[in-house]
Length: 449
Image (cartoon, rainbow, N blue to C red; front, side, top):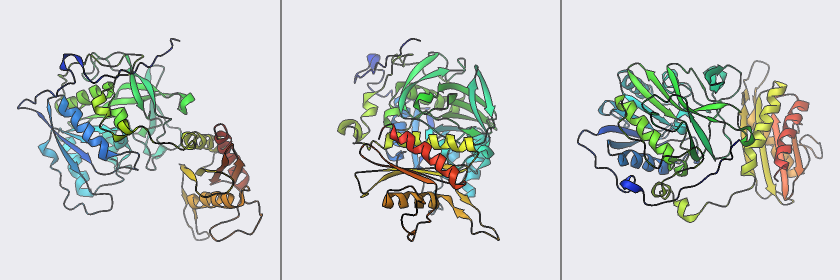
């Protein structure tokens, strides 16, 4: 196989004034509403990425962009009244668990009657219990989605397939550059783009689930098992129809660095134009990435303060936590068990602070009944981890009576690593099975810590 060389094209000046100056907007610009205001966590920093998404559309010279920032979930939405009808397309840089009923109905009617919708990256995590939204986006992840949300969709042997295997929706490996492969070369958004091109370092979403109706996958990327991937060719770019409306859905664009990729910018601009008008008039830029080189705009990358200050110092645990949780998920799936997995790390010989991460595998609680109080599996898993952090022994070792907040149950494993202690705990099955799952997590942490 040809070795891929990542040639990062760093330049602040682009030929033919391609990116040097925004193209003056004509009088008949496409009116776009860009929605933000919520995310599932600080890792999706809409406060930074909204300004980038706005600039990228305005740089195309054919869009007039208005930003609407919503209240946070649970706050008062009575004054938040975006007039969807005044715009030809709505771009969602937005990840919220729910909306008031009247707002949901307004967006449904807007798209049904012909409005365009653009869904960027974590926006497909939103609204897991809103059936119409899930129809609009085709597939989504996280926020408790499981097989009940629909099948997983990916390409196999060159064809789009649905997979009804049980399990949670949404996963990704480390943020690395990856190749994007065109699957619908004659679609207006993709016409003229290379068959294969390199996208800059980003989260490659996998195991997304949904109804997948009226969905055309424009491009995929291979989720490499070597980077904790699924081994499938996962959908990256999609278009859908809902009533008279058109939807463009891109799973790319985690942060400013990913948004600065010329491949993302081009497909985002063209996808928004198509969603708004059903046409694409924009040409493929000369700097579009090739099959083995990434191309990105430095002026966009500089919109993130971290570009100038340099990347923050990272905890070595961060790079291993996801793979350890995936190892625990794999073992739990083999045993046919659902529950909650926790991994943690603290340096030295005595805990002063720790880094931890949690994954829900199928279920996070057991409902109460007439004969049982139920079980908060997250609380139990963390109680096991806390016990181990204090005793430096596997949970349930009975080296002392359980303290308040502990249970003294088996199901967690702790080992001494190279520079500190590694902890994995699982709650959801029999004690002996919880130990097996926890052992899989610790073994993965040991590979780097």
